[in-house]
Length: 213
Image 1 (cartoon, one colour):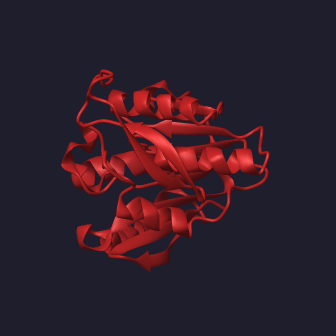
Image 2 (image 1 turned 90 degrees about the horizontal axis):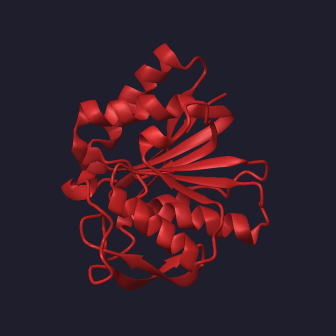
């Protein structure tokens, strides 16, 4: 995610005294979730994620695996799971990936709180190498620096299934346009036929769509 430098702070799961309950709006309804310090945007659904969630299309009806990359406490993954439940997409598995173990613990707690059985929160290295995704939604950690960010994207974007899309929200003044240019160059050299375009621009954020043919 893109606003706070401590998003990649590796924290142990929060104690009961550190966790707090927050009411947020996800998938068109108000829900209660748990958050804690040491994770990205613990007090609200951050603005970039709000822009992303207003932009992405509904999950593909045929989707079996979808990915929230850099999940934090889970607003994107939980939205995916709520939508999948609303639309009876019972075969859809929602992968929530983050390097922060406290974030993953909160995602698991929040999924259980909301009765969402198909959310699978894991560290990156715990995702099987052969896992592939029908769509990726991400508020990536821009502040980790270009090298780390590029490494993150080149690791996960090739795991889109044919016909799949990745949706990335990036703050304009943190390099959204230069990232789009870099992605175009990288895709041209590594993912034949793949494209990147600006799908939306709002509140100082760009939403980039990467399409895998």
